[in-house]
Length: 173
Image 1 (cartoon, helix red, strand yellow):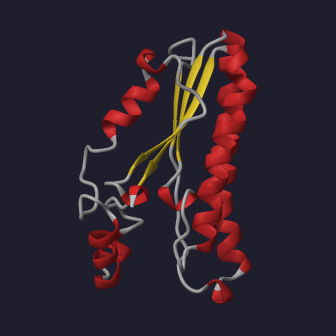
Image 2 (cartoon, rainbow, N blue to C red; image 1 turned 60 degrees about the vertical axis):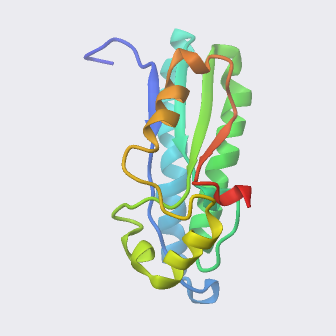
Image 3 (cartoon, rainbow, N blue to C red; image 1 turned 45 degrees about the vertical axis):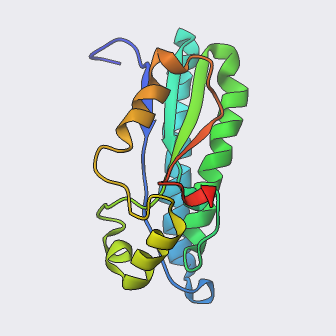
């Protein structure tokens, strides 16, 4: 605000992972994942939303996950947190549409990142990606960009409350 005088776009992107059997998940691990992945997204959106409401315009693009749309064994806290982001996105869209604020989310499938490094190098996960994505591979660098640019641009002025999977066809099959 100090530099530009307004806030038009928020790309709300946060994620940590705790993996393993649910019965072995500690409350500390659960709280960390929920705190970063869901509460963090809520707090940033809440404060950005205040400014966007004042200016009667804004675009919020949250990062959910296909894990918020489908379940994956061993990712209980992550699935719950990203499912929360999915419904937080829809709730904010319903609440803030009257202020000309669109709120949408991308739902990435498997993409290489620091967080997914161990998963994507695991032979079991590699096989699951091959068998469950129509494209048979994880996403590549740059393949999320178009979805984010669309949702942050005026081309999406009539799009709100949408969760856009960018998942190589994972949820299609």
